[in-house]
Amino acid sequence: METVQLKAEYGPFASTSSTLLAGETFVWSVAVRSAAPLSQPRLRFLPGPCIRGQVAFQNPQEILLWVGETHGWRGATRDTYAVLGVDEAKMLLDTEESRRLARFHDAEDRLSFLAAHAGARLLLGALAGQPADRVRFETSPLGKPRLVDAPTGLDFSLSHARGAVAVAAAYMPIGVDIEPIRQISDLDQMVEIALSPEERRTLARTPGSLRSRLFLRYWTLKEAILKAAGVGFAVSPHTLILDARVPPAVLAVPDALGPAEQWRVTTAG
Image: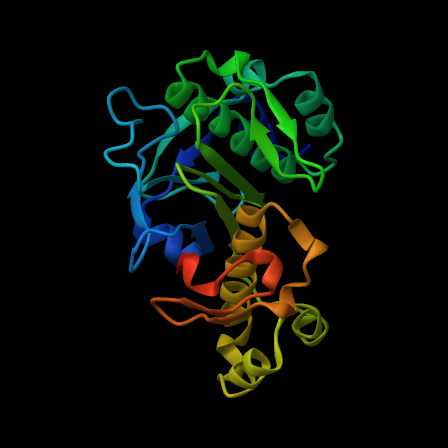
């Protein structure tokens, strides 16, 4: 077992990433569905998933977001501070989460899963007034996790990829997705699966060195929308049409997702 893996497995392993560094290292996106006339989601970045006095909504249209990273993937974390240790995080999981954790063969995938699920429990426990290890979940028919005995209207989403973690909550249907920035070797195949003809043309006009990054923006935006809608990949991602520039915009969605103008998205990376 590698030294980095040993340190990650047995020491403090998850840190809050600064907004700037998160955008340099990861691509993350958040989507909410709201009939309110919002121009953009009102994001509030949390310094941790459970910081006394800070885990509370300031208004019903606010989004709480924690973006973190796990140690050992890109070397030492910068401008961050540890918020989770392995032992305390494992104690928060229920039996099924512990089984799923044990199925990961790669240590860094295992740590990302642990950080996301422990972080979600800490955040939701604080919001719902429940101990984090007593928070209970159920799954919708299409696979979206839901909080049991949640305050009316409270929704959440979590995402983890190798080295990257995001947890979001709102009093609106919400989805979050995060991916590490990287060159995608099978980009052409992924484009065929995920992008609409309009989006493919935009990607084709993008300099080659930037195409993978732009694709990840499209991908995380679409997955965040599908998570918020609770449909997963029962709806094909190429049927969503987006403008992935900053600020991003939802141009068209299938009828199953409701009016496009009700979707609000934000992204970084």
